[in-house]
Length: 203
Image 1 (tube, rainbow, N blue to C red):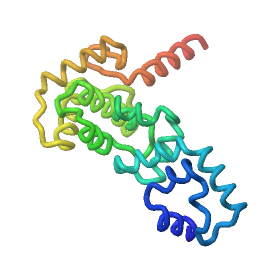
Image 2: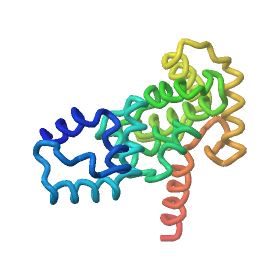
Image 3: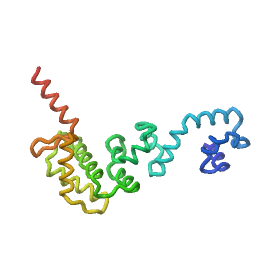
Image 4: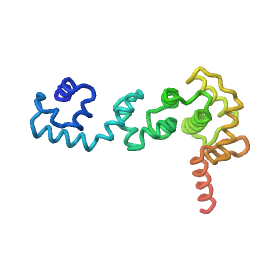
């Protein structure tokens, strides 16, 4: 840690870029000998892509530990995934809730009434409710109400209930959620339940 502080003091916050460009810039820094310099430069070059992504995630407000977890999941595609659909983090990464992903989405310009945001809230609330209650479905009216609450508590923008209802229909048509009457199922739970029922009948 002390040597790292010496490097940053000497080279500044863009120390990694300077080391990649010219490893000789490390010569003369207190605590570093030729062997340590060689090891440091080799390690930085091996992990340069990861370092850049971690720094990018830090700028989005993620701490190092969570940033590393995100990188481990998406690897080199991390920043492109986040810029394309930050709401994927909610389902893929433990420790990222809807509000955190939504704050990130707002930073990169996703509007409060975007279909992407509404869909993310619906899928998130359906899955979380099933986990919390032990059920495999929610009633459509209940999902509509809790999703509206989540959307409007995360950002102070009123969302028309009809816009949320329209996204429920689209998600159902696309097979992202499964609808039976007024019951809405999270897809993986629905097919798990069907498989269990089929297996029991077969036995």
